Structure formats: C-alpha cells, structure tokens
Image 1 (tube, rainbow, N blue to C red):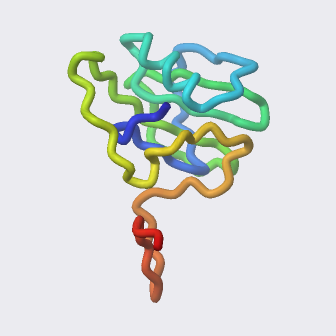
Image 2 (image 1 turned 120 degrees about the vertical axis):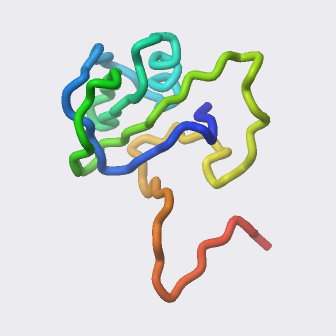
Amino acid sequence: DISPIDRVEKDSDYPKGTISIEKDVNKLSTCVKMCQKDKKCVRVVAIPRKGWCILKNKMHTEMVKRPRFISVAVEVVPPSKKKEKKDDGFGMKLDISPPDRIERSSNYPNGTISNNIN
C-alpha cells in the first residue's frame, strides 16, 4: 500500500539520481516498498507500460513532464512510528495498470471535488 505521506505525481519523471532500474514490477506499491528498503532512495519513477520501477536518490533533478510515467516521493517512516492511514483519496490501493487519472492538488475551475460520497 502507498501511505498518505507518499506523494504521487502523474506524467512526471525526475531525471538523474538513478540507484537502480527494476524490471517486471507489476504494482506501484511494490516499487515503493523497494525504495523504502534502500536508505538512499527518496523517490520512485514507474513506467507502468514497461513494468519498470526506477529507484532515485536525492541527487535527482527537477521534474520533467513525461506522459504515462508516475513518480512517488517516498518518505521512509520506521514501522513503530507509522501514523494511522486516513482516506485522503489515496487511502485505496493505487495498484492500477495502467494508471488512469492519478491527480493531487488539482484545480477544477467552476467545479467542486469532494471526498463525500452520498
């Protein structure tokens, strides 16, 4: 699972700072878990169509728009200090392939986005 403290960005790549490229990865959560196990890893970039997971260190450069790439900034929290997960819209599994519409902090003029479902 991806924790609410992790930040998911659609259509984004962060060049440079590659620790490793893992292939045949079929879940975004698996990619994040691999990063959490590596002390140098601060971000993952997934290429779902290829099944690639790229682990990144803090030396990565600024974000570059790349269609169908997904980036997750990973904060490693020791298991004993993990906070209760809240459903902030990403409380569900993000193990979707290919990812459809992952958006965060989006602005929809003349519209309202709400977590309240009647």
